Each structure stands twice: as C-alpha cells, then as structure tokens.
Image 1 (cartoon, rainbow, N blue to C red):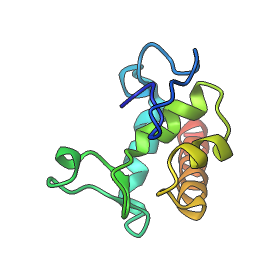
Image 2 (cartoon, rainbow, N blue to C red):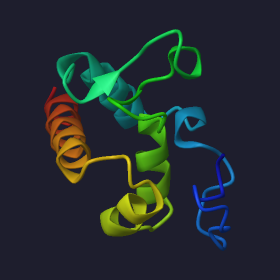
Image 3 (tube, rainbow, N blue to C red):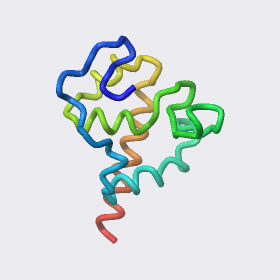
Length: 107
C-alpha cells in the first residue's frame, strides 16, 4: 500500500501525492522500458499483482522503489521497509535505470 510500510507504519509526509508512474516523465518511461533487460531481477507475472513489475521473489512493485526515492527516502530506508527486496536487485535496477536515462537524454 502506498504511504504505509510493510510494518504498517505511516511514512510521514514522504510520498508524493501523485505516483511517479502518473507524472508522465520520459525518464520514468525509460526506466520501465529497462525492465525487460533485467529478467533475473524483475518479473512481471499476471498471477502476481496482475502483472505489475515486481522484484523477483517478492510482491514489491518496482515503482515503489522509485516513488520512495523520489520522496526523499534513502535506499537503506526502502530496504528496511521492504526486507524481501535484495540490495543487489535494487542497485542493479537503479544502475540500469541511470544508464537508460543517460542514453535517452543524449539522444
């Protein structure tokens, strides 16, 4: 649930009022397009959250990481709130997203 950590603790004033996916940023589209290149990290299965891209082995949507970072949370805070997400998976996703955004801005 957006705005609540898995431990049901509110994230005080941290999350944006509009999810990152709804902002229409070209960077977001680049990031979401990068998901296909990370099959060991990200999975999209119709039986898991209706096909929403999630970190492999979890029910944590990838967009949740970006929404938390956008709101000012650190990666460590995100990993504390979502302990099923492995640090390596989050870092791999962020590195690929960074690479894609740089490529898109250079084009």
